[in-house]
Length: 93
Image (cartoon, rainbow, N blue to C red; front, side, top):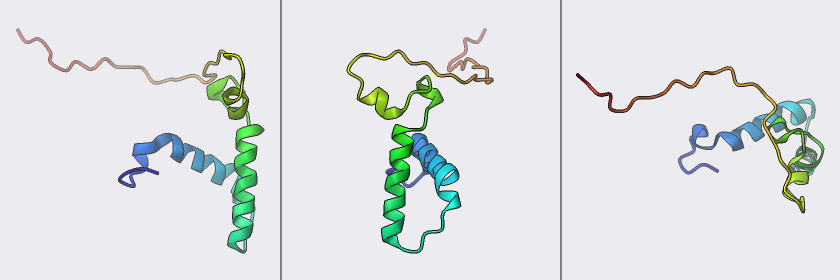
């Protein structure tokens, strides 16, 4: 949960929420809270144990988290944004 309720404060949590809604929950019709809780539990389990993540070399989060040895991971997507250096206090002549 974010402190001020601003989604920009916690981008990772918002990303996970979006993936769960778009990839898993969009096709289900849920009639009551008990069914919703059960479905959400199953979806979170799938997300953590079955879905490979490009940010961790297509491993699952639980395989990385519960690994006994250090697994080298790398991000498998390309970033097309160029970093532009920010000059805080430029020297003026």
